[in-house]
Length: 317
Image (cartoon, rainbow, N blue to C red; front, side, top):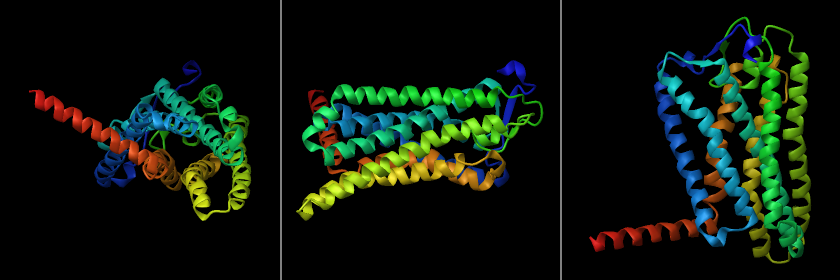
């Protein structure tokens, strides 16, 4: 891809227009990054270590947390470095790699959220067949399919962008190599490439979202048939957190990707992009898991075991 391009590196403008406020942003984003890492790693560890959480719902949550962690690692460390640095360049290959991994994990997350919606449908609407519909073999196949599909779609999107010639400006008006700000730097007409990317965005965002809405339509009908108030509350609570993450993730991603790059507005788009690159991974452990009583109990048990282990090791000394 690099052979067809005059540009050998890209300069990320990021938040340079904010001047000294970048230091404040560095502190804020660093704190958020550490919270995201610690929260998601805690969720992954608890689910892996506590056998009571070895269920399909928590399996997919563990995969989602892993993907979210990798997703933030691709973007945030470089963004934090750029907030303190004047040299904000990325080589042509590094920029393409960042876009590939970012899109790969982002698409994987979208597909996983769709699968998690189906899992809630199977648990609430088909409880007698749940163990068959969501057997460990099926769960593994669904997770692998999401990951492979995510990175294949990402490969297509990244190739469509970086196969274009870049012989003009190399200044990317963003804090990472995203599709719209990079493709705008291409030296030729990009209509066909953008159309294919748009169709891919529809398949990745709209189709899973419609599938989730249909699943929750059946779930709502099933919940209304439950006679006890406690039963309704418990059934709804297992879905509420998933819906919050779905609304934030699909809403922000659709705003950015389901429109032509010509309508890209750097300031507004950067704000929305921050929402799904920082806030959504933060919501996953905070909203989706840590408010869950089963996860809270498992965390307390893990802390108690660690405390006892530490106490015994000190006692032997």
